[in-house]
Length: 241
Image 1: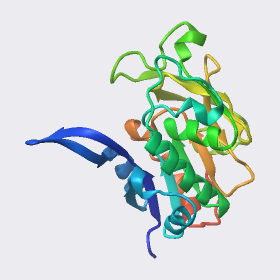
Image 2: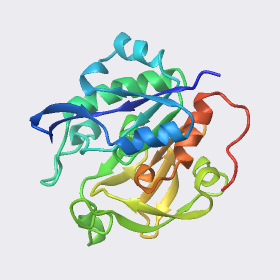
Image 3: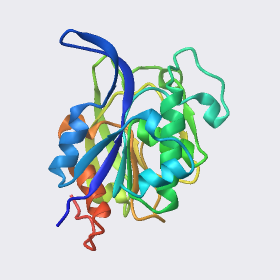
């Protein structure tokens, strides 16, 4: 049986390796490893290749699932807000990813959003973001230091897709200074122990799930396996953890 093809949205950043210091299209390898471990193949989607309208729809026709990777903050204008001093955006990613996300939703393509990807889902569904969680929480526990993940418990709503994937509760690793304020048309189904939103989903669709943490860095294949199962159109439900 042909393995499903999962498109992974990518960064376009200045990068250094070997003797090179240049702009590069890249994505952390952990995403690719998790997609492979889940039984699918991955293709990396550069921001400037996502386009809009027919271009995005044409891309989606070639995919079996979409993985929205983490990264920089979403432009606040996308949800009607002014930029916080700490907000750092990548407008090219916003434009491209929202185009392909809307095209994916139009044909009920399975979608998994990770960190920024969960926030992008909320914005696409008409929601809004908290631009700097320390202003609300009084601490930076969800992003303790540069390159350091915050580890904390999370709980998931009974009967939700998130619960079927992760169980009623789990320990997660966060690296984000923003968070979901309003989920718009999505349903909030996961919360940290300080009530920061950790999971959102659309129960009316085949598979649309956003997680605010980074399961790929924990080697947690479960959400990627759930995406791949949906992409493969398997009839069996997601097993309980």
